[in-house]
Length: 137
Image 1 (tube, rainbow, N blue to C red):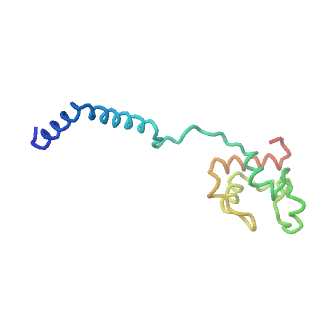
Image 2 (cartoon, rainbow, N blue to C red):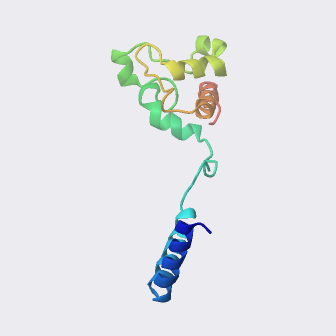
Image 3 (cartoon, rainbow, N blue to C red):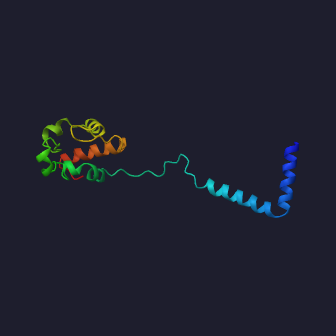
């Protein structure tokens, strides 16, 4: 043993001999074990199901209406609010095209790329397409 380690060991032994060291060592070991169990590390947690109807109600219905036809009062000041039942829209709407608009926004519609994940935007796109088809969401 080196001189420093030997003297540290002797100090620890003397301190532990008095009873204080044992309490200190036990406290350090217990706190280290307890803290080790508190960290989440890189664990993302459990998967949470995507509920597109809830996303639509919170982020889209205010302008597009609960039925996807556009809020009648809002249409008075913003006549270009998308009606998801419009045959022209339904003919050209794809999951990718809807996701692109949701991500980047269009006209007065804000972009949602920073607040919705890609799986949520894709689920929302399918919901919008089913809503426009008149299918029960």
